[in-house]
Length: 335
Image 1 (cartoon, rainbow, N blue to C red):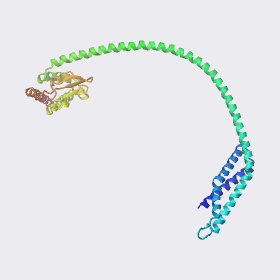
Image 2: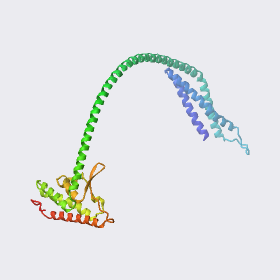
Image 3: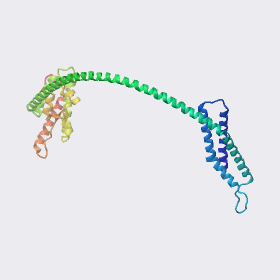
Image 4: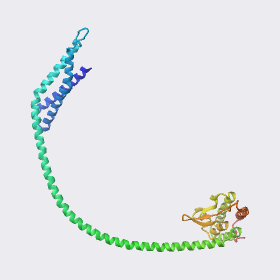
């Protein structure tokens, strides 16, 4: 196996040598070709010295070995012939390399020096061009710097004018914002006062719900869809009351967002809608800037009578709304 691998290496070296010799006989006299030939020669010499030669010497040394018992040669006649044949090829390869080495070295060195000189000349020309470019760039940079300074000064003046303009505009915005904030605060305060007055005026319970429903009726009866809207408004109020009566301890049923689209569409948009919720026992409060109708449940453990009165009032209002739902829209509110 070792001899077979060595033979393959020798085959490859012979092919490379033939290619090298063939390239020497062509008309290609380019410097790069000569330099490449020198590199190929060095590669073959290294292969011969560092690989093929060492392995070949080991095989030649083993030819003299004999079996210590039989005193017979280690290799048989066929193997000995193969080793000697490979050795002859190696020596022939070595001789051919020695034969062309000087010419290849001379041409390769000369061409390498010529290429190096050409590289140096090109580098000098490139350096000179670079210096000229640097000089031109420096002059251009000086002109650009001067122009940039003029631009910066003009820009600074423009920015100063813009800053002044923005400061004036910002002050106007702040003044306008403060004016609107004051107006909004006044509006909120007026609305809060009006709501407080309304909550004081509205009676909680059936006595308060009845006039609130009368106000709702007076407005809704003028609508094109009066009958359907009246039924929808009453149904929504009935749902609120029914939910609370079915689960009075469930706080979810006792809070309604003022912005709830169903509440607004069915009740909140009409005069008397807010009064109806206040009469049912809701109070309008602000939570995170949002209006919410909240109904507080009395503490059953602390005052059972108060809780019972509260719950009875809810049921009576629920029953009253049920009575209205069972009737068609009257032309005049009957209560």
